Amino acid sequence: MKKRDTRQRRAIRQVFLDAARPLTPEEVLERGQGEVPSLGLATVYRNVKILTEEGWLTEVALPQDGMRYELASRPHHHHFVCRTCDQAFDIHQCPPSVEEIAPAGFRVDDHEVILYGSCPACA
Image (tube, rainbow, N blue to C red; front, side, top):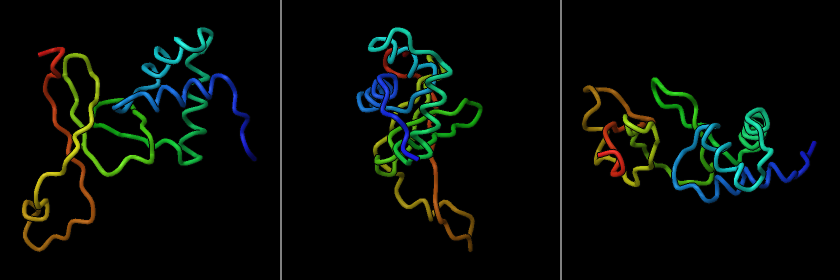
């Protein structure tokens, strides 16, 4: 069943199209309220779930952190988390030869790299 394209869903989609990094539902709410002031957190959660089920968004699970979301169409990449402002940012390259750092005899099928530190605004 196709979901209705509501004003709230359009605003949420636009938030993700404008974002250059993974967002928490709270960040989506804050940005989305600029377009739809009555937007609520429950509506954000519901629509993020729908957009994820439809394959438009993907989940970004960061250790010790709540779930974040980003466009599913993005190519493979990694993340940097600022420990001061708690924002996540994209890293646009993979470390060279991740296979070389795996234990001897192990085969790497996939990998995820997460860097932690301070973003330029917090440094």
